[in-house]
Amino acid sequence: MEILTHFEDHILRIQINRPDKKNALTVAMYTEMAAALNQAEHDPAVRAVLIHGHPQVFSSGNDLQDFITHPPTGEDHPVFKFLVAISTATKPIVAAVNGPAIGIGMTMLLHCDLVYAGANARFQLPFVNLALVPEAASSMLLPMHIGYHRAAELLFLGEPFTAAVAHQFGLIAEVTADGDELRSATAAASKLAAKPPAALRLTKLLMKKGMAAAVAKQMSEEGSHFVRQLQSPEVAEAFQAFHEKRAPDFSKFS
Ligand code: COA
Image 1 (cartoon, rainbow, N blue to C red):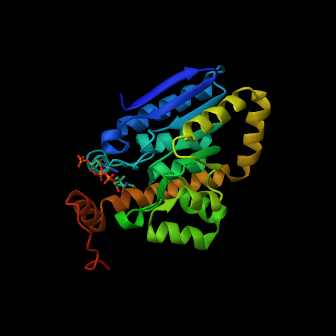
Image 2: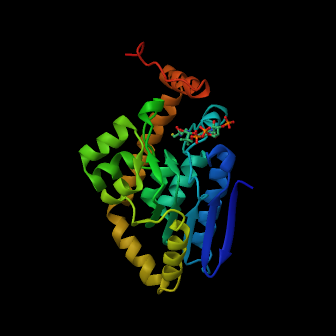
């Protein structure tokens, strides 16, 4: 099972469990994660959601092979259903991150409420390097949250950045000692699960409602560009290079 769920003490845990592929996400995994989030939304017993991977890896993002075999073609694709579910969730979502958190492994965190990252977490937004465009409304949320110029550095250069930098930019709640991230996230989820649930849901709604329509619109626009760009020769070169474990050559594209 590549997505594991466990319900206990009013917390629904969702674990990304594909460590041999660095927790790269496939269509089947998005489908299961979206289903778990929708279950959390509709089950009154669930008061908080906790998303985590493994101590060495959170997620290396979309499975690059799956992009070719199951490319997103429209809004009914599992990746978009997952993004809608996580971005519109009304219950609090806590995440524990360590190791690589790349691509959607990072952008999904923009839709979590409390993120605890171990000191060895490494975030990266390599969309441009792969000839793709950002998703999860990150092209809007990042400039808004951390400022245009910091966002441009992260999204244009696509280089890894540390948990300390993510914290400094206000993208995560706390940097924990390596290996303590899940403990800290679980403790936070337990505190949230003991709060008055309606007050918590309303507070989240009040904090997010001003941006909700803009987030949905941006995601849809990003999705259209993403789908088109996936068919491009630039992407073919980027993916081939990943497969052949070499640097891509974009010199022939205009
Ligand atoms: N899609 C598909 N397979 C992936 C993957 C991804 N996003 N990330 C890692 N893998 C696979 C590797 O191909 C490798 O498979 P193999 O053992 O069959 O050769 C395995 O996971 C281990 O990865 P490896 O690269 O050997 O581990 P590493 O520790 O040297 O590096 C990463 C880890 C995450 C830094 C590196 O794998 C990476 O950069 N992955 C791609 C990230 C990416 O671009 N994601 C897309 C974002 S849109």
